[in-house]
Length: 390
Image (cartoon, rainbow, N blue to C red; front, side, top):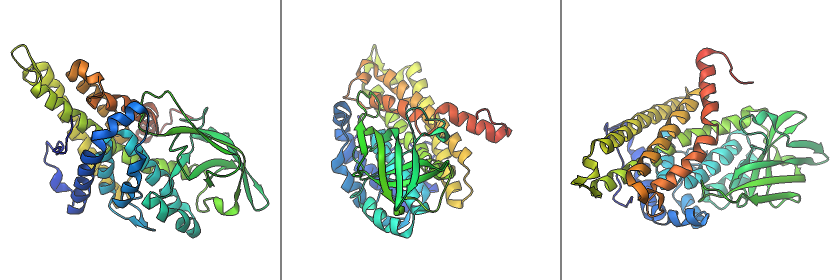
């Protein structure tokens, strides 16, 4: 199993391509994950619980809204934020999802599209982990096609009234504020809804076999009244939620590389210790092929992430490029987790080891924030100029 001695795979020696600050951030989070997340996350996965006690520590370490500036946020580079996601997902996809939702799906839109009053009200507390948020876009019947959402907002004296249902919402039942996307006069707008509002209900989704160490739920809004100051004033239409998803997908591209690295590290260690017939199984050709495939795909994904981050920092990043990286990196991470489980044999399906947990988690990551097929079509449209979907 992974331990505090974990150093990570760097087969092509790319560490010198990172700045000193980026490496310092990565190594700080790497040590934190080894010491505080890896030892206990398996029990949380088995119990279906999230390690809430770590949320204030996330704030102290500057992991929440890390790439944003001002309002108590550290303002680190995009690559450094990506490396945070990489190390957190080495621990568990659910942990990275928590930080990703808080940072990219709630704090970012407030920072980018909110009023000054909204920024002052929410961002400092969210950066400390004192205020938690969730992102209400997906609905029971509208996932890959969010433009078909049924949630509505209508103007009333002094504010708005919201009605609708959102599903598959991370942090649904733990959030203090929900960023709900709804159609106002047919135009998609974002609303900051305190979860204590009358008519607002959040319910956990039970029975998950993936992302068990993450809170996932449903939001139900029945004539929920919010004030004039609840609407995000600086964005309208699907540009709002889609820009948030681009931020979050960027973190996923890095994050799943961490999960893949964890599985490779575990499989390599196990193969070196597990003796069958005359030698450790690492000495057999078929096992070596699996390990070499892992090294190859992780190395390519690392380089893809690095360039993706540099494009983002230069302002040249396009959403389709994020789609390509999300599509590639999640797919290879899922394959690596499966091959690692195969190398571990029957032991790979027990919670004594982590590859089975990563394997299950990555099935959700393969689907959420744009399925593999949808990202394929996004890139297909980008390279051909022809849309294969409505």
